[in-house]
Image 1 (cartoon, one colour):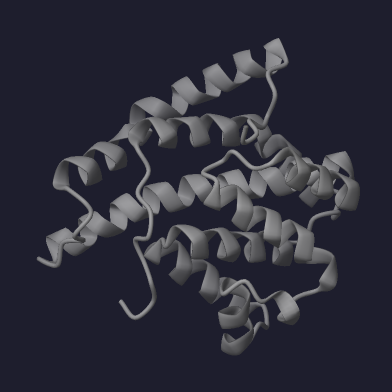
Image 2: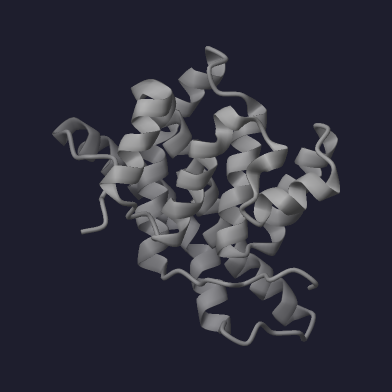
Length: 199
């Protein structure tokens, strides 16, 4: 593990909250991709940016491979995940900075940061960007637990992790997924906000 992986561990309840949030917002990403207003490159860059904050080894491998396949050099990827966005389109900068801010604040960004996203991309694309961020948050949280379990099975346990945590979070997806879909639908019907801001 040459990179700084396993920086953060999230509770099982936090995993559920992000899963529900993703279920509520994913429709906006689907629409934006269908209308070509959000590119696959931007989504992948968001996933790399969030993964750098959380330190998911599995997600880093997958999204780095995708970025390389889509023409980014290793140097460009290294710069981007370090928070230096000179290698990417200037139009993506606000989205990537917000993605890292959202991950750093564990899903409770500042209202000012979100307002900047809204003023830069408009409501529809901003919601699609939020969905991409929430999607990789779910992937990171799950991937961190699954990766730690993989290391444990190789007799190289991650110091901050436990077997109970790794198994509990890895298996929680089975009951959580249908509940999160229903719970998210109810929240949408009630008009609950898609974001909780840092007070």
